[in-house]
Length: 76
Image (spheres, rainbow, N blue to C red):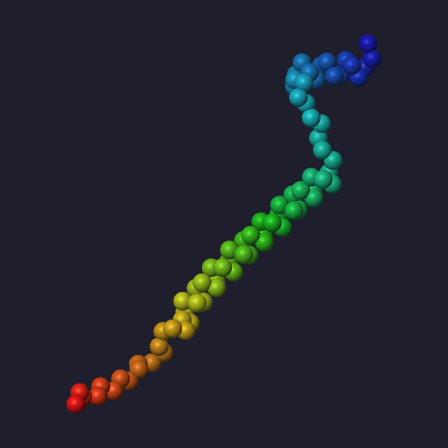
C-alpha cells in the first residue's frame, strides 16, 4: 500500500469522502475583493438615492417661495 492511499484512508475516516483541499490564494482574494467592491458600490448608491430624495424635498420647485398676491375682482 502506498503512502498516499494510507493518508487518503485516514482522511476519509476522519473527514469523510467530501474533503476539499483549501483553494489557492489568488481566486479567494479576487472573490473577496469583488465582494468588497460590490458592497461599497451598493452603499454609495443607497446614500446617493437618499441624498437626492432629501435634496428634492428641501428645494421643491412646485412650492411657492413667497406668498402669491391674488386680486379679487368684484362681479359686475
